[in-house]
Image 1 (cartoon, rainbow, N blue to C red):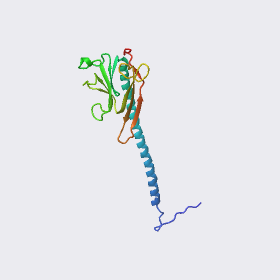
Image 2 (cartoon, rainbow, N blue to C red):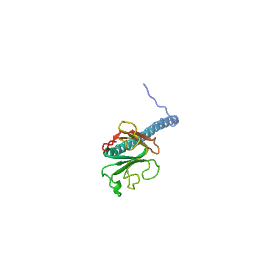
Image 3 (cartoon, rainbow, N blue to C red):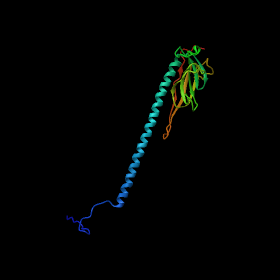
Image 4 (tube, rainbow, N blue to C red):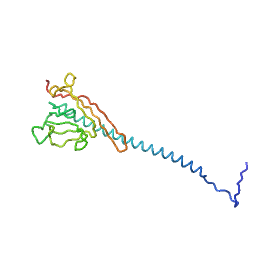
Length: 198
């Protein structure tokens, strides 16, 4: 094989360079690659944020239900305030300024959108009229309902016949650029072990 160089006008070899078509093709391919990398990065970031939301919701739910279950298992009585609020009579676990409500604790859900307890499942020592600061157990709650059962596993119609309680709730974590992370829960039914038989 014989290689030859083609002389130019001045007798020098031609300098190698990219043509305009090659530059446009390379820029287009680079744009597609960068768009793919950016999309993957955004998807990973959003997935990570949603996973963090699920993790926070799960830990709050676990902690809140554990505290609720401890109180309800030792409760000797129950007052049904509404489908989202119950007051339990427990041993002297909660000290309040009113001696008459020292052995009471209220677990409730606030559906309001503003305020100290807005969209939360919380515990407050005392009854529903108590002014003691609440302890927030679960944040970003969108729905919460208590279901009460009697000894025969039928829906209880009164406080006197209530022997077990079950909670159903939904936690919704949202972000500005994220799809909401929903966590729904139906708890085990908790038995009021110390409630006298009726």
